[in-house]
Image (tube, rainbow, N blue to C red; front, side, top):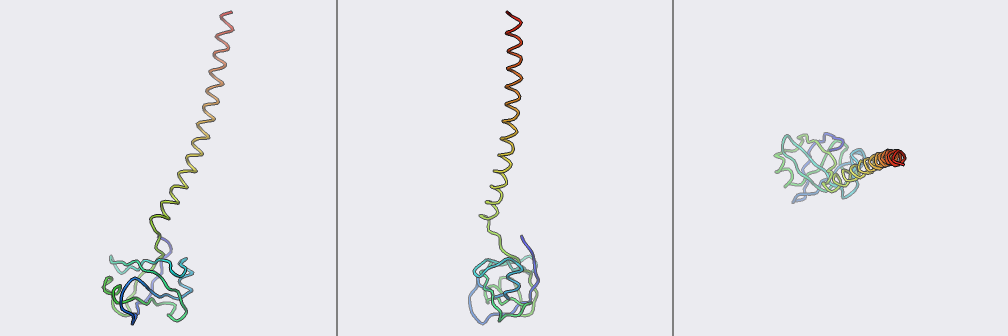
Length: 133
């Protein structure tokens, strides 16, 4: 989860669920572009919705549709915490990149150890063959 901000609930006049409006400045602060997903939390209840940033909604407000207000058990002027939703795919991609880097580092260490071992064995074999002559 990224940065959090607390916003005041404003009920949208549009029925349905899954789309919220937040101020452009708040969207930028959270790293959300138009169509990006947000998480809105009230206590232990939460919703994931598509964000529509604009300048009409107040900087401290979030416009939630009726379905989302019900899911959160929220009322007009309640406070909710909002964060950018980070999809599992994005998290997995970052983790894979980290593992690739650590795998490359481990591979280099193994190769270096193998080269040292090869040199050591070669020296021992050369010593053994020289003494037998």
